[in-house]
Length: 481
Image 1 (spheres, rainbow, N blue to C red):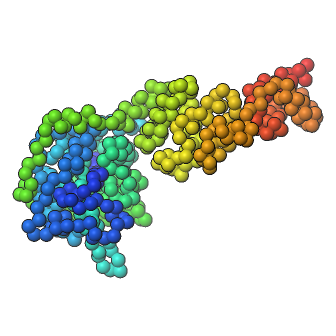
Image 2 (spheres, one colour; image 1 turned 30 degrees about the horizontal axis):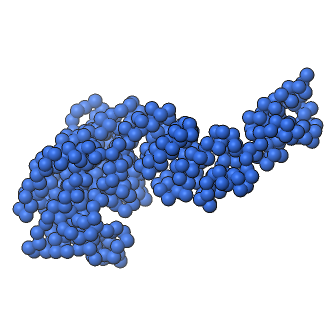
Image 3 (cartoon, helix red, strand yellow; image 1 turned 135 degrees about the vertical axis):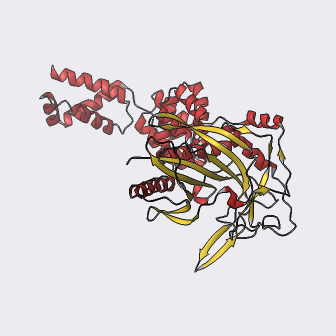
């Protein structure tokens, strides 16, 4: 039988605040900071300690809700989510349940069939747990991360393939980074994806038993874990079995999911309003101020780049990293005065500049500024140097940080366009290769390109290719007569 996957995602993203969600402890990198140094009675759940809401975390959460086209509720309520786990010091998590911060949003993703709208059920604020490490049969707890502001985003079960789930995750991560609310560093666990998966007979509208794959911290794991779970559940139904509702982990080494525990339902957590926190009431004017402060988001930026004359592919590559998109924007703005086309800047940026960076995110530390790149392109455009020389100049710019014009002057790299000089170089090449000339005259036209390369080489790569080409064509044509 053919089955249709039904997938919803839950995303947990740590918020970029200086202090924790309900106390003044500093937020630190849990992968490098000494354990249990940034804790206090509140985030370790000591008796009598009272929480206080972090206003900056609320502001960042509202930004996300607005960017995801959600309805922002002027009043929401924090709740206690009760469950026991060693890295949860209070024995409960402060979260939101019945009245979350934002609901009823959406995000469009690209699919082979075109744009598809994925509904967002809710966006709510909660606190992160501590961090468990298992060493030599013992479990160690680090509470530095306990209480860090965490945003949970829950979709409706609108995704129909593992590939769609990844497309949503990629786009959401980009939006969070553009908003400045999360670094997107999945290796450090600051954003984690959970895939809720069920399958049903194709064409059916029923919702079968689902499983939840926890803590998928890479797009590769999200794709592989979701795809495996779809296959596993399909095989169970094919043999007449039943899928158990449970929480799963994913083993990247085996490529398989494994059972962690029975899947909890809402009533298992015994939610009730947090007695130590009042309702969170937001001023509508404040929400409007946040709305006006939102940056240009990836979709809008991509459309603007396409309207500049870029291809959809080029635009998508440029918007993938906000730092790259900002670099391109600065280069285009500067290039206006030099009449350099955005398409030319995009080509140099996505090919030659990217080839010299360890990864695209390294562009923030790139020694070649947007203005320097445009100046280099301008030297090619006005035929001061050719493309081959420009690439050598770019290498020098990376090494020394010098401006392209300065490098060209110091090394005497200006392009030779004098036709008499080029004609003489062509004459010498033809005289030195009589056999190849005979083959060309006998009909081996491809040798024209070989002659071109020999002339360029003889002139140290500094000759104007257009002048070489036209002069060579003229001389070779005259030899045929």
